[in-house]
Length: 251
Image (tube, rainbow, N blue to C red):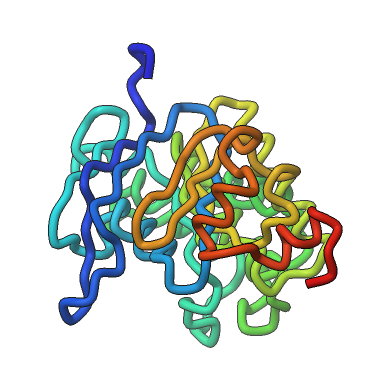
């Protein structure tokens, strides 16, 4: 990578469930300061790859480096927005409390958040348009509002590298555009973002880099030169509906 230390480097990651490979010998280098999508068909291992990089899934083989160092030394650099469906939204807590949880890595678990943490959390809620809902129970929020709260929790960490697992799933168009705007703003500030994404029609509009994944890494690089019809066909096992639309066919 021309002498530049990758923000994320994955070497030979393999993950298997009950001896069935979910990821096989995946290599990936993510340059610093890019907004990168992970795309591929259902069952391609997109979420598993994200969780493997984060250390939430133990690989059968392989290594992960964050800015040239093992993950264990660099966790403080990372912000994570999980899939909304993986969260217990009935837990009795407010939007503001959820966002302040993002400060625990700085505080440690035995120091209570104070005025400074509350101010930072409110600023993060303001960035995602959720100030008016700060004291609302998270169970009372819509899907899009919940997603904005979790994005605010990641923002309040002020991380260098962000991992987001399908942040646009189940949200309305307004929320999706707001999230994209924040992700692009973070990229412009030099942050690196790795995002599990499923909508090929917005790939070029939202992202500048992409990983095409189907158990193996098919290709990775700038969207314009990587997400070609040929490479997408390899990734999805044939011509997807999106590709046929691009070619002018009706499928």
